[in-house]
Length: 443
Ligand code: AMP
Image: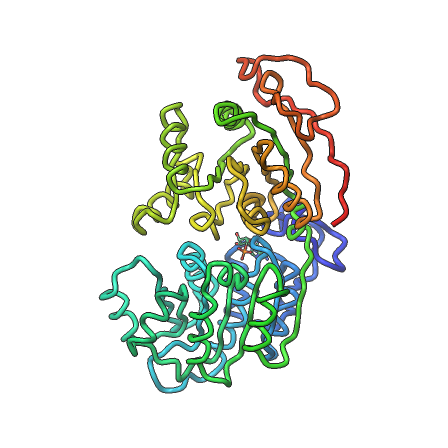
């Protein structure tokens, strides 16, 4: 079951539904065509293989095309990039560019990885449009190259706030012909401390611009920021199956100590159903150490964290995309925005510090409507953090155990003890678990 669309009585995988041949589905009304996008964008959508818009696309695109400011609460994985990129490109290709070389569309993203994905999306969706020049300005990349790029005529500028502000303060950016501003994952940018940078950047853009803001939540500081920088915005709240992570099976394993955790991890990673996994650690150093020890144990593992040079990060990500790396050991910020369909499992070796990060982490699997598994390893001291996560997601995480690797610490152990089988026995292609759903707590 994929992007569930209100009003649709089918729950097919939009991207993979056969449209012709013996298994052809009955023709569905093409809801993309009804959104008002120009023919060249529809051609590009067709070339991607998407057949129907996701709920966030279906709701946000017409409102954005009508010229309104829009606030959208939607999760990563919901198809939100196309929800802003398609109407933005439509606007650029329809209107006459004012004289100048500055960007007509600015997209701010929290991380370099997400910025690169958004840049790629601009190229994919804009490939049948003429004269759309896209530039990414990210931290960690050489200034001279960026200075040269900024001197050329730009249509779409995708940037992380810190580096963009640097260039702005050095007078290298001209926002005089900016028509549209998009804040992608605004909540995350605020979490990362970019509020002042964002406010300075926004203040330098024309008041006549159209503003689209995407965020997991529109409450609290995000809501205040949105109120300051938008005019009579339309508010769209998406509660798709994906947003509720119904396509991701969540499990909790209790571990007594680090050595027990390592045994559990190794056992879980040998599960035959794993295609690729992202393992999250609390620190960059732990990511390196764990990746090394997994490589030593024979796993095609690699680390990804913020202390690595951009070139190294890109190489690692490419290796994940091509399937050469099966186990990526990452920290929160580095893994933000990773969109690799092959990631079947997310394993929290350490729990995240904040409940929101849990949601972002598990969203690395179950991409584009696929099924995913998210496993958290926790010890007795993590009970409070688990409660917070369960309150935040309004979803209790069932406790599982592995026969032969049961924890001494009871935690919220399964009601029944699993039958004793030694872990990793040659005959076991998948691990046997029992689960008990924890009693629902009031939020
Ligand atoms: P996003 O939420 O923008 O990160 O997108 C998540 C994933 O969904 C990406 O891999 C997109 O390529 C994919 N996607 C976006 N729109 C659609 C659609 N209408 N049908 C199928 N897949 C989509």
